[in-house]
Image (cartoon, rainbow, N blue to C red; front, side, top):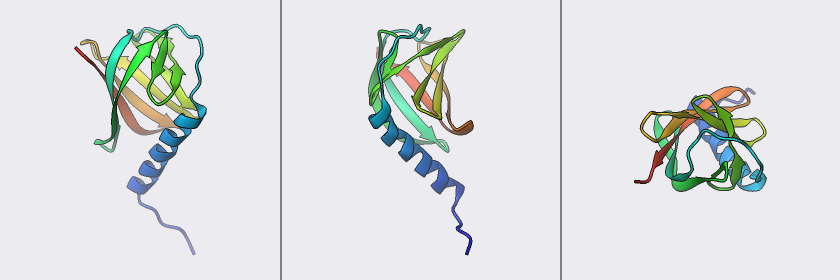
Length: 118
């Protein structure tokens, strides 16, 4: 008998796994970053709906949310691997914040937005 699941269920499960694994696999490391140090509100979106919103910061070239994730520099921001196969991009919005897609094994599962505290 085939198993039927909705796309929303698959996305929600993938993000839940990503958040849980981020707690287990977060690690510190050295990286060069174009994401500016400071305190941000991090918003995780799935299907346009806010899944998780929390304070975080960029410190010593690391994104600090649930764990510490080395930021890998790009010309317009950076990217982090929250755990193997789960990568988020932080692209400058030109106003001090960053936003970009979140991937799980190469498939877009949502997005992240970093809004600076002023």
